[in-house]
Image (cartoon, rainbow, N blue to C red; front, side):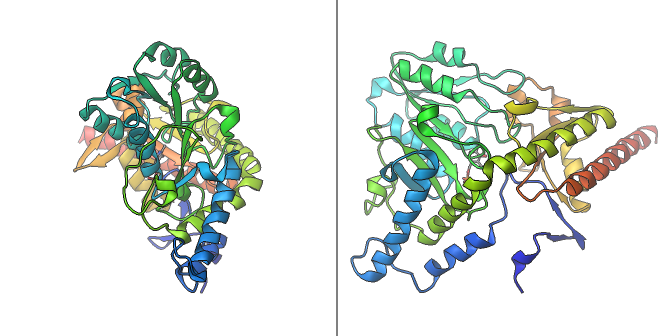
Length: 401
Ligand code: PLP
């Protein structure tokens, strides 16, 4: 049986609706097919001279060409990594530590993914200066704030292309222009945006950019960092000198081939899929806000938001409770807050946007994918609406008891 014939998953004996594509996407069958040879007969090490090795090297070269072409870069500017997280780490640590002690200032924002925020905190422990910029109520960084924060010691500005929780798209072309005027490098985490928005590194003025394969229907455990030629950067992982010395370790040829396949399938359909998702997104948001009392939208509305992102709060309801009830109904979403060590951590993104504690705790994120249908969105709305009323009724009942 081919498990990929039917994309529905079975959860508690019900057909599932997957609305968590920002967490990860289903690997496309064509991607799995593209990977299989490198897990079998074509097992060579790309560093080997013999034909087994050269077969693997050819796959690696072809994948690098596809990745580079997809963003307007040269193949030599692509470094494959083990994840988007690793690409972010290499971008920050690799560039900051390439500068002398008196030029190790990093500027980033309060809504970045932990791959950036925790790496920034690590750099601080090494004595680097870090500035974390605020955002407005829509989760957008003001380019003027970037300009004001740049000092003589600034080496790198890292602002994400689009936020993973609320989908806010940042003004990165403007921010990149400002940083370049001051002779400062610009990195962007494009892990969430790459699957939905066109990314041209020259048009946007990007020096370094992180992308992750599993967010674009490719395999997990593969990412890439674009590093513009001439950018000072040192390796974090030392060893055999693979990836032009920037990331040692025998390459994951199967994963990289799958990543490239996912990109080649994505490009011709990206704009059309994004348009379709944004129509479904806007219709859903409109229905929730007008028909479910006490609901509110977190993040911007319209084109300033990632086409697949919906982040909503419901007064007097915990996001976790909604998530669990939707899960029981076979609908997979994620909550705004993160559950760690048994306690619920409010979302740092919503805090940075000034969202109050109640709304923060009531937030859920729905992220659409290339196969999401209107019927699925309608079913989700129905279940969400009924669940919200039921949870409120239960709370009211327990208050009276
Ligand atoms: N950056 C952003 C904005 C993300 O959303 C994620 C994953 O959710 C990452 C980085 C990390 O990517 P990976 O899961 O490939 O490590």
